[in-house]
Amino acid sequence: MTENVLPMPLPGGSLQSYIQAVNRLPYLTQEEELDLSRRFRRDNDIEAVRKLILSHLRVVVSIARGYMGYGLPQADLIQEGNIGLMKAVKRFDPERGVRLVSFAIHWIKAEIHEFIIRNWRLVKVATTKSQRKLFFNLRSLKEGHESLNPDEINHIARSLNVKPEEVSEMETRLYGRDIALEPAGEEDEGIAPIAYLADENAEPMQLLETRQKEKLLGDGLASALASLDERSRRIIEARWLKENESATLHELAAEFNVSAERIRQIEQKAMEKMRSAMTA
Image (tube, rainbow, N blue to C red; front, side, top):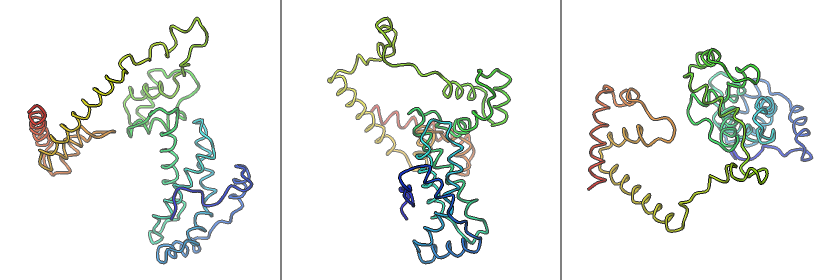
């Protein structure tokens, strides 16, 4: 099943016409939904999956409407939500006793969340679980446009089970004013960001040397990792080489069924071995 296109075209090329069209599509009864889902799982019936998707497009429109405060086109939000819907239909098990809409809501929201995170201000404002939680809840929890006071920060932190400093940081990211890169006039030429953001080290030879050093470092790291046993390599990668949240000692202890102190010892020995390998 294709997951990267709208299951039906925009009627007349108009978003409003599309919304009106999907709102006119009939609902499925529970028996019809069950029959279509079984046909798709049993026979890979494309017509069955088409009917399942079409009958739930209005759900995507409704959910996407709730994310219009992030400055992204509604059509794009709906498009991403439709991708989530198609993923949900593909994974839906009709024998679990739940309706497709209940199952699909998670997939629709997840796809829209990912799209917003990728595109909002072209900045990675939420890369951890707690940051994502704050990103999608802080707007609704914050009253007015004034900066949060310490009591409000602590209240939101408790409500979302995050640290107060994370609330403050996310507020700054979400509500910080944009600064013009170029000067507005001659009098601003010396203080506009473009005046001090130039990279003085971006000479061709310096760039080439930097890339060579990075390559050597990367090769050395790969070689050092290869010198470790499988468990030690897994611990180092989980603790130091993950792009987002690193694994904790307790998480790895549960994974390997040992104590957190044992994981720390293995990590320490592995780091020593890697240092030796990279300096040899």
